[in-house]
Amino acid sequence: MFQALINLLLNFVAAGTDEGNLYTPCSLPGCSEAFDKAIRIKIEFNSGSLEVRIKNLSHDTIMVQPSFIDSSGKKKTSIANFSWTPADVHTKPTKLDGSASELLLLSLSRVDGTINTPFPIIEYDFILGDPGASHTPNVLYKIPFAKGKKFKVSQGFNGSFSHKAKTRKHAIDIEMPIGTTICACRAGKVVDVVEKFNDNSGKEAETNYIRILHSDGTYGIYAHLTQNGSDVQIGDDVDEGGIIGRSGNSGKTDGAHLHFAVAKSDGHVLATIPWKFMDSSGAEITWTVGQDLEHN
Ligand SMILES: [Zn+2]
Image (tube, helix red, strand yellow):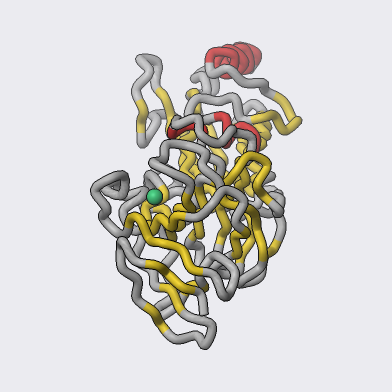
């Protein structure tokens, strides 16, 4: 039994984490900085079994899927000498709602007679958002600036300048001066805010944005906001039409504008999906690239 315990400790030292009963930040393989902030993992073990509990401290939905790593570093979907529950934990990601409630992710037990077999290293893969979400049919989105204003649409769906990738394909770019008030197109919970970057850097990685989780598991993304241009914080609930921030020119742009898109997880990335605007009466409106979009 002692040997097994030593092996377990070595395993987890090798995996770069702490053993024990305290939740630790997710410094495990498979974690990125964003997940490191959001995820806490607790590992409890005894001579025969190992349990992994997990908390999601963010307000976002995160999917997690553990894998076993064998001695040659390969991911395994089954490991000899162990049984585990739930049985489908390797084939189906587990959904962690943004609530910080504890979930028993995995329970691993030695099969009788293998007490000296070390526990396998466990690796965790994380993805943002719920791939099972489905966009509410016929939902219409409010125009993201104040009533009475109009601004030119400079790029639309599948636009050749920067709307080809699936993370941007179904997006609109609306030219507007830096500092224009931005309103939520749809109600939801603010799950991500970045506002630290300067306008005019021209760097894609320095885009300020607000991401709002809708009730159906899709997201509204409002990008290129001005520095310190968010009027909301992570965790805030926003109403449709509520003021969320101010437009800008952060990130890679060809001029000050708002980029708005609706997206959902495709199991890997937040892929944009088709959506439609409505006017103040709730009627669907169409818009055309190169022409003004008027909020009336
Ligand atoms: Zn855009």
